[in-house]
Image (cartoon, rainbow, N blue to C red; front, side, top):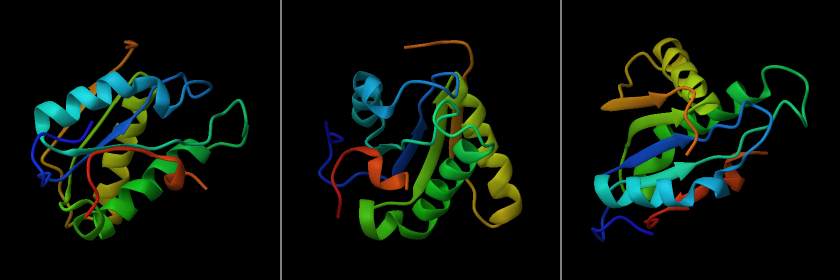
Length: 136
């Protein structure tokens, strides 16, 4: 479901949970749709390599940081607005905090408008992301 406005106000990066070993972005469609509707942002929830399939650490953190950097560089032209928020739940909560800490060093001039993390609560990677909302 796209954001209610024909032009979204930016991008919301949502990292799914699953204990680093299961789940995928398709499991969280209702959550992603609700976020897009309430925030008027394009919601992107990327797949990341799971520990059960790739036992080498740190595949998942590297994948989500690559997505965040891609969005910083390209979200205005691709999704009609800048990356504004990062959020996650469960393992995604930890990964979203990892993104923030990583970007403090890698992109010190970049800043989010907000973040939200929820721990312990259930409710080639970027090309497998689920995108809710229009592209430019």
